Amino acid sequence: MKILPSLYISQTPHMGRGVFTDHPITAGSIVEISPVVVMDAGARALLDRTPLHDYIFEWGEDRTLCCMALGYVPVYNHACPSNCEYEMDYTEMTITVTAMRGILAGEELTINYNGDFDDGRPVWFQDFSHKS
Image (cartoon, helix red, strand yellow):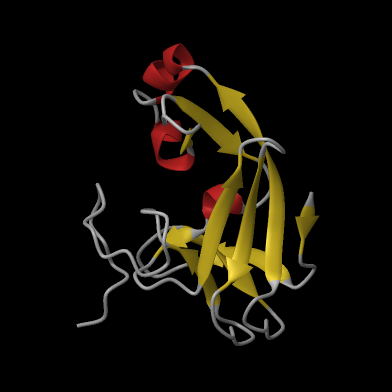
């Protein structure tokens, strides 16, 4: 597992806890490489009925499995566009988070729950990430 030492978890105004940095992060930097625990469709059906539903990821080429990422990955909040993007490696059983742009000290790190940092499709919860 790799997590930048500048990362920390703190409260956010609308989304509970989030991941922040106390040092600037340059675009293209790997922020975190997290191992995952992969679970089958039966476990996913059970997890979907619990609060853990909001913290698991669909997993596998056919997305019938799910995984729980270790490290800070489950705590990144959604934004569109996000300042980070995640990539799943099914062979290595990891999720890698990469900065998509420069991130300032004190700024929250976000991912887009739809996968691509600028994917504007609706998410399953009220999205506070868009500024009006």
